[in-house]
Image (cartoon, rainbow, N blue to C red; front, side):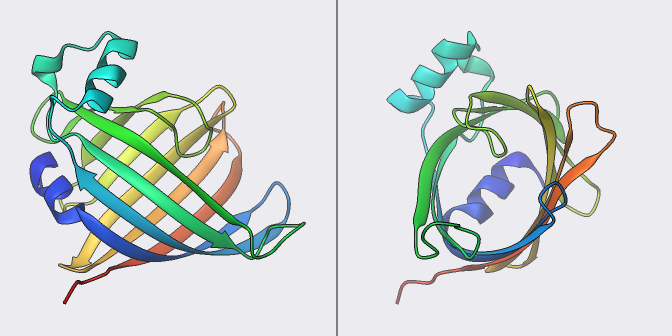
Length: 177
């Protein structure tokens, strides 16, 4: 697996079922989401804006993309039917064939711009590590088949010693007929 094939395989609309366990709150959460991943060009204004804010050289990027999500959780205390949604632009900056940095307009664990480190394992699993001010998030994404992928995450304390939250998601591509 390389970065270009990972982004190409990820493009499309996915239906996600995620189970999360918040150790900090001793709460179990089930989330149903729709995730859309769209490939972008290096000349897309959203990509250029993110590059400018991080002072990154546009010549070094590869396979930028945008992700949009809409999620329903059973852990909404006031309104269980409340839908959370958002989007972010992601711009990979490869260091070599299997690793690099990923510029994110919005992070996974904390709603702030972030620079993550990514790498591919020998089995094709994409591993993304992001250090935030209060936590460290590690996500793993792997393909079971062309239209099914899995995602797991672990959110640790900023020192990396304690686990705050874990999750696992199975995602199925929505096919258009």
